[in-house]
Image (tube, rainbow, N blue to C red):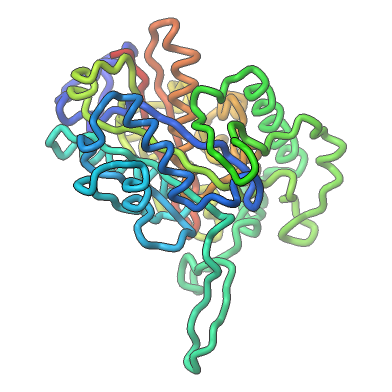
Length: 404
């Protein structure tokens, strides 16, 4: 993939258009609380309508799709990408592959598709992620005597490295980077207010594919709370560590969601008549101390920016998966990104965290924001998506919105 920018107009230096990955369409489902409005839908049910809509949006034949690459973290296996592809009406000749890097799965699926485009062949991929936490299977290990030992989550690293629960890790980050309870509450409250305003003004409407739930058509997110105020935030007790600063109010909630994009080459995008796109300049995954897993996104993003000789201040749009306010603040400050500049329409603290879908949601949100803020002015925009990952990792993607 291209390693340098020739200017801010969107043109890339030294790039081969047949090998330059670009995202030309991006959609998502409503993001709804687990065991809520979408609880009757399994992962393929969440994903298949998006795949159908994306194929229609870019005007290709279903058989023109090279592969379907989807992230999933807690599903029942069986290759949800292949299942959803067939459910969406793609022909049996179109394969599917499911990626598991836990919370980073959706973004890593897009990264994989981008790298495959860079390898050549001028392909077109559907990539993204999906999670139905509501229908995730109950998990158990089989003991020596044949009994079942049920568990709520898998082990992410060997015990000698520490394997903290997510909330405990968020407390570790808050303590290590000096992020106070007040700052976490303020950040979470801002996320809700931004998401409420975005929903009120119809910002999310064009990126959402409505889904038929058991009782009604679901066409909007159900997480943002217009009634949330600072005094209410302050009443929440510590949720994970006695006397800690991480609460249910400044943490995300589990959600059912799907998000997917179309990734192809710049050459093919032009041939298809696409009017704009998000050029994938690069992707990077980093490993960090599992005890401080929330800082993984910042290390991934830092490596990516250094590779492209860019400063954080040069990035126009930033989407970070707000699993916890403590790690969002720590990562943004580590990079030198103004928190006011990130997640302009709110993030996972308000919308919810659909695990394997969340990384793809970041990209879908960035494309929608770029179209809204830069397309009308005919400008390009540099965008950064980043997500921290269980086990002590983080993935980031550097994108550039351009008019084609």
